[in-house]
Image 1 (cartoon, rainbow, N blue to C red):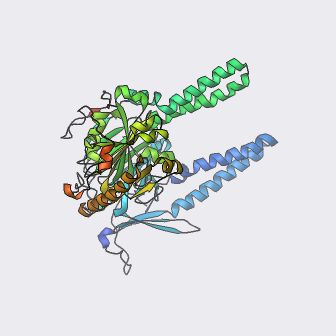
Image 2 (image 1 turned 135 degrees about the vertical axis):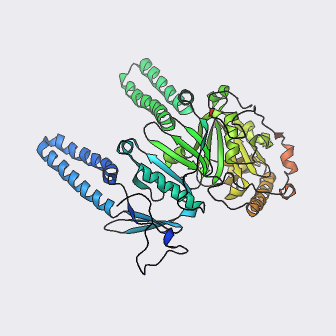
Image 3 (image 1 turned 180 degrees about the horizontal axis):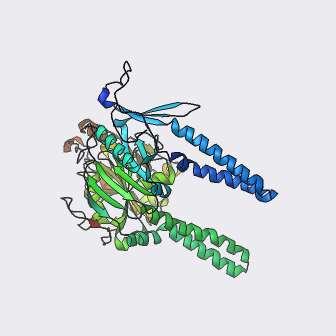
Length: 504
């Protein structure tokens, strides 16, 4: 059966989906015939490895060959059954996926709850001309019903159709045009990875073990060098290969991200769906002014390293370029313009060195928190996206008269916390932040995909609670950064590579 999207009327007397019509129902489609091979080769390799151990031990290679052949035939038969009974189609406002031949499973995904629709092409799939379509939905802890695999034109067409339906447009609306905003040069990406904390930690461990082995005179210690070396090289390999060719483009349906040297990833960060942003600057990045941008998008959290990769908005860039991109993700937000409040001096007993960098700030649109000495992290959470706000106080905090305020977002890299505040400041901040969120949600417009910008919440200035006098008593801190970055008109391509270091 063809994978191309087409319309097919339902059989006479068949019920229509709720709120749908015949034009909103597509024919059942199957995945690409190569799907059993791409999904089953890892299991086949694992089976061969398990069988091969017995064959090497017993030196019975004839039996090994028969077992491999039986495993291959069984895998092909099971894979073909799974492929044959896996079908999908669009019914009104839902994507319906049927799977299973012994235990049937029917999943219905509401299109209006889609947070992202990504196209992933593993290296083997690229040779076969197929791709995986990943659907991220609100509240999902993992990819919801990935369609692996479709031919590349079919995956592109289905993605465009889902985005159009999610935006309330006609299903035949073609994919929106785009223009490139940022391109990360491979040299900058490699340099930022080499001076990153994980790689330097691996190199330091390698040097320490090598010196210890020479001093002690035990060659056994050299056995630890290989894992250290592989660990350090693995950091560089994963970062460089995974983020190679990283580009960010703008289109009416959001920011489009493309990356990958072997496995390629085409991702769209939809407008208005970003729950929070983290700005990270490692210690050795400061001379160049490099930062990293990560975002919380509902559905991307909770998937380990894969979730962290999909949450990267920009792996490395000078602050002026990153700031201009941040302004497109959170329209109307000026992170530099938010005055910061520093933690009280008694917080130094819990953070002897980094207490000076514990800051938080609030304006009429966002909550901002700063933390970190070697690696500085700034979390930015729009009031309208806040999930909850809470106060925590550990035993040592109680002794020192301190408390922490957490502004919660969906699971992801963003951790917005005002650490070690005075209890009265924490209580006022929680009360005021809850009121800011309530007002922002009341005035926020509806979220749809194919819009150029999310409607900015028009919160009256006097409706936002002013900072308490206790906060000002600790001294407000304001950070200034150099100007520059992406042009306001969106024109031109910005290549990462310049400097523009944030001030301390």
